View 1 (cartoon, helix red, strand yellow):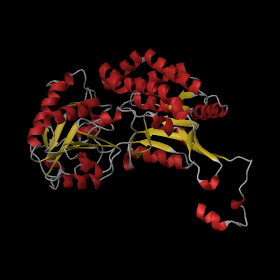
View 2 (tube, one colour):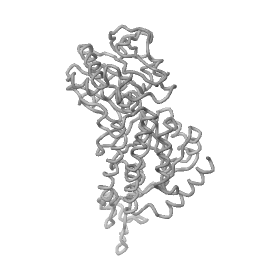
View 3 (cartoon, one colour):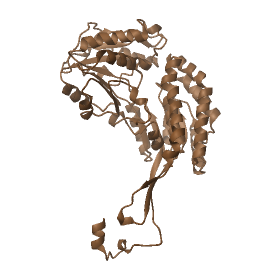
View 4 (tube, helix red, strand yellow):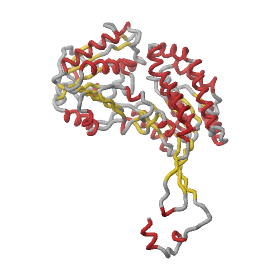
Amino acid sequence: MQNYISTTHSKQQAYFRSGATLALPFRKQMLRKLSDAMHQYEKPLAEALWTDLHKSYEEAYLTELSIVYGEIRNHLKHMRRWARPERKCSPIAIMPATSKVIKEPLGNTLIIAPWNYPVQLLLNPLVGAISAGCTAMLKPSPYVPNVSRVLTEMIRATFPEEYIAIVEGNRQVNQMLLAERWDLIFFTGSPSLGKMVMEAASKHLTPVVLELGGKSPCIIDKSADLKVAAKRVAWGKALNAGQTCIAPDYLMIHEDVKDKFLKLLVKEWKHLLTKDPQKAKHFVRIVSDKALERLISYLPISNSPSGRPIGGTPSHSEASIYYGGHYDRAERYMSPTILTDVSPDAPVMQEEIFGPIFPVLTFKEIDEVITFVTDREKPLALYYFGTNGDYVLRHTSSGGACVNDVIMHIVNHDVPFGGVGNSGMGSYHGKDSFLAFSHRRSVVSTPTFIDMPFRYMPYKLFKLIKKMV
């Protein structure tokens, strides 16, 4: 495998240096080839997603395929404008020179994708790489073997490996890939793995785009429309069984509306997934036995529904199952679950849950929420329901945010998607994908018909220069 990776990497370097990827018509042709290939492999991809994750065709199309189709259409429509040189003003000190910024592809890129949205999170960055004029080495996740197999077959049938290549394998293969020198590494995964990627990239000063995760708070204020909030939050947590990097991770509910909101949330889950989510067509399974066991470890023994303020200090064993808590190891099934009486120090509050478990904390004043959120790592997303959204956004930080909604900021390709701090660096989608794989190169062009003397030693016109600069 190491020999194949090194050989293919060398081929891609030679291919990029040949200039074959630079012409805009070529880039558009390759994007159309990717779109055609996805349509051709749509059924096998959907079937593989069902096999690996129990993801229905409808959810697979809405959360995976349609997003990539939309990204391709957007790049085909706007790529020429994005690639156009940007004329910039020139200060008087360099007149009569002209200034501009040109966009050039970074070169040979590596894209490593996770398992939770294995099609979208591999191919969406690829759209940006193709659009910007780069080559790409793709690495799908081994935790969804059927999806990875279909993606590998599709990519190899569509592109020559010196342009777009794909390799399967575990973390050892990741290490082999990271040992090579790339012009950009695009990684989506956990913060802990993101640190390893960044460490490997630092050896060659390789730029990285890290799309990570974190504990994204979902805040329900007393001014919220509780019925609408419950419907949208229930959907956001049920989507992909909570295995979404921007899923609402934990609930912070104003104590005056806690009981009413939780009843509405349970009602909406039953409406979305029926009274027995295990039999629901549209409820995804947990990706692996190990991941399921981690989720089971968060479940307490206690089963009395109640709530405790943020400042409370119950132990992990004092937490209560308000709703759900059911699982089936044979099917890797975990039901939507609400935990109350949760301590801020409990294990379920220490790391991203990545599953359908909702720990609940309550608050009296919104400043309690702000202190709680800002005392922790910056999340990938923040969700607020109520009429005080501007205040919360002004006093917190997150990769992205929604006011009176969840998840939906990822749908708009006209806004950047990315993390901040521990939740990642860099952003993509739409024009930001094009820029993520590009270098913005400043160019100053100076004519030769005149050569202003003031910049040359011995600076005879220094007093005049001092006024100009």
